Image (cartoon, rainbow, N blue to C red; front, side, top):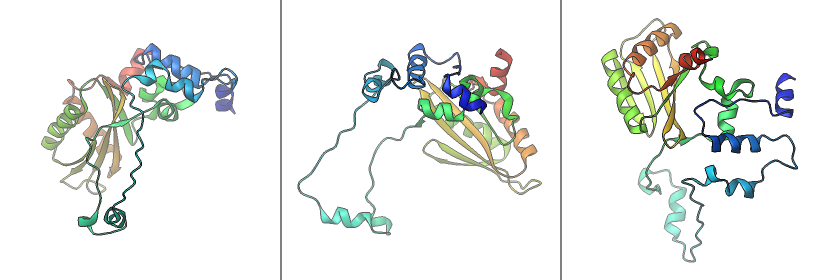
Length: 220
């Protein structure tokens, strides 16, 4: 009921690092009045939304290669049709940011209310590739094997702990062109060992981490 009341009156706050344009768009999207709420055509014309936005292009081809159609349904790897493209971190839109926030307070995305139980997050102004490289450099001396795919990583402790080998999953999200959010969560193993690992890892990422959950709590 408390959440419903907050939604009905658009009661929320934004973290200080969000640009004014982004805050303005989020405010208009969350307008509880459908008569004044921003429409899809208006969103498409919004200054913040249009930055680096490329409209999708749908092309229709008259001549369809039946071999390509058949390849889609083949299980063999040699018949797979793959699209070659440069991978980018997953972009977090306004709705995803809101869904991750407790009580519609976007500032709480990075506070310590979660208690560092199974996951934590930090923000970074470094490029995504540099973040990946730095995490790998920091994890290997701690005895972790590193598996990378796109902008996701799986860190596996080569030495078994109290509940087997500790596995840590990380993923990089793009919040803005110059701002990334890194999620670090325990995928397998002991929670206390995860806390110890993250403490050691973060101490090696001073030049990467911009704001941690603890930092955001101290600011309040």
